[in-house]
Image (tube, helix red, strand yellow):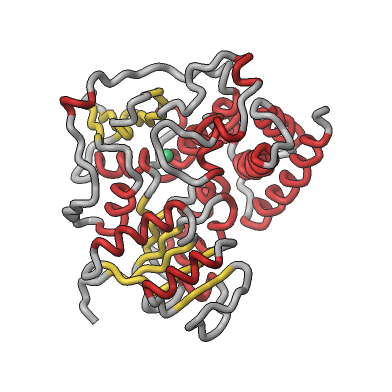
Length: 377
Ligand code: MG
């Protein structure tokens, strides 16, 4: 075995980030090898991926028996396998939490796309990473940008600026927002992403989750993290240092770049498949503040982050339920905020929660959010 080859387990391989991770592997067969693949409902795609990449370990959440699969593993068994160097957590929502903790406990570095893991249980996850001396490489484009800006820096951070495209409804009035459809919401102007995160980008709950994610990844207080609407999505985020110097990371908005960096770090790889930015064609770069009144989910998420304890887990769970009901045409776009707000207000938070208390809050919030949504009429 070539020691330069990084051996990967990819969790959520059939999702948007998982598929793009496999594209990078395809581009660099000498650099990366797929040892484990884990997928969910899309069995056909998982079967195709297994046939192409021939991983030694395969996990199907539906317990499907796939060709070449020797035995049903648990996902925890997969990520702790001795032949894996890096676990790519490309699941979404709550699904990534246990596998992430299992990978950290097994001493694996992780490339993390599943932001809810840090939002729900940031303190527990960071503590495990420190205890086992492993690293968390962010895949989220904003956090990858900050991570890239921090390379070679010993200097203290003064502020972090996360950029946001603003999503498809950035200029909609309150009354226009009342009538938006699922189809319009899924038409994100810039980024190609899964359904959950695309809806979260339209409500801006995603940006609130990303502030919480940044708080944990970069040990930065909430007061020092700001969000800028930047419709061109060319600057992926910025770091201000204590001397006032600002560093930004720019690039064509394409998730394959942050994915590739998380896989190849600390190396950078030339990839002819990735688009390069032409600044002369980009034109002006604009910045605007977030409108809290039109996008209440953003403030709800921020407040839950600042409250800490079990509140961020309740936020994530209520949002997951509300987004699912919206995608099923059972509630309106503007009701997503209402469901989250009411669920948070009914919650009695626990400070410094254990993992069990976080998961209990998650269960409670899913049930409560569903009831809240049913009461809407
Ligand atoms: Mg992002």
